[in-house]
Image (cartoon, rainbow, N blue to C red; front, side, top):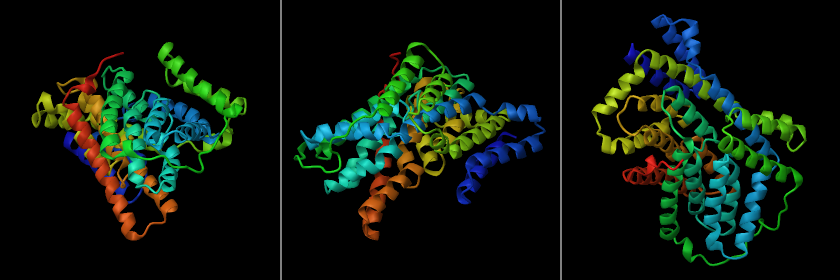
Length: 408
């Protein structure tokens, strides 16, 4: 039954991808089929659904969507870049990396929010868009598994359900260190340090209104509540988002409408399927296979590369994390670093042009640059190569043991 369970998992992903059906729906269907074949009761079937994860994701998305809809992060980014551009253009990638890393650590979906803005800067500077985007890509990869971010909540909830005890702030510290190392190399290799000052239009003086100020205070309260007082990430963002909506800091209808329900369905459905796969021994079988073909020294980079390869063809949040994290529980390596490797690997190739994020970047590039077919293909290939370089670089860095950092 273990082999059949894994086969159903693969088939569900393939069908969902090929026919553009939400993979979460395919997960529910696959789980039901396995339940019928294996004689699993409805109670045991539903037991695989991670309701805590679903509600945590919903809570954080209420807060994040409220901040996105009232323009808080866009205003903050323009303000900071405006300040830096008056001094030296060469500091712009540093500002992009730092600002959107901080935003990502706070749980804001920085990539979708910032891509149009970053590409507009590249366009105004007559610069290769990938050269500018890479700072944003590295900020995303470094901060994506923050305990306050959607991917992080998903990652640590699945780890908790699998019996793996991790401190998410250690994990995201490790990914930030790895991404920072790559960023420093990129800053000098790409020639950013030699860029001459230019006049940038469209990033003039901007001001924070009361809605922006209150929202930023809300995010600060979020961090204090979760880190300082240990309040669960299900409760804290929900309460703060409620306050913001009640005082009119963001429109409630627009906030609720902008919640990525498709992602929540995808994650929930796949958690149901992977729960059944685990019940039938599929996770244990996959763990044994990985354990036999590798050794403890290279286990972390191998997990990172496996997660990255899977993320090329399937959702990191919906498929890669719920499939590979339970495998970690059955391996002999450092569990925390292996969980980090899975999250980081899923994020690295999440920016490939064949993924949702990479597709969004290409769409924004098309609408702004109006490229020829040759230019579009060139940029697409550059984005693909960038994602491969990122996953390869992170795999090499992981050999140093950085992903197992333990500061908190």
